[in-house]
Length: 205
Image (tube, rainbow, N blue to C red):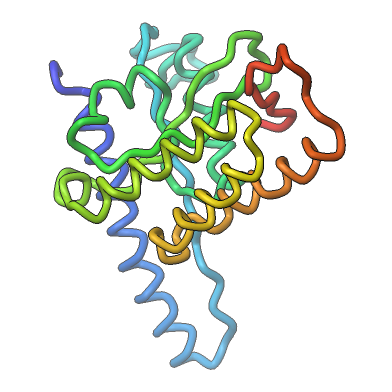
């Protein structure tokens, strides 16, 4: 599949549409039965790289699976989705291939658990229908201004721009910006130093 990166993003977005419909159906069933509704939440991590794909195992355990370093990173990205308050996180190579078309935002520079090399990670917030909207392009430009100020340790400027971004995102990225608000508070109290590279070390999977 020559368009595997695009198709993986489309599949993830389709999953979220179907999940929303499923939760709506289950909510109605719960209300009709007079029981508490328990929402199903899903996180997705998408990464691009070489891997081994196929049937693996033995007679005791046989499965069609994928193995490899790129697969492990995808799993780590999925695990980070709940921490950043976004449902779909892309690795850098995937994001680079769809950034100009899909609605994506760079959300952090992190070292995932089990790795030593930092990677830029991105939130996938919509397809081309949203990515090409003037409103989203304006949010993306403003968000990029925020990350530039953040990495430059310009905390006051970063906070001001972040507040503008939060308003433009209409609550969708509140959890993400709360993370950076807390980090800035910590950095003001304990500055990271001139050699800080902006990398956040993720301690959880």
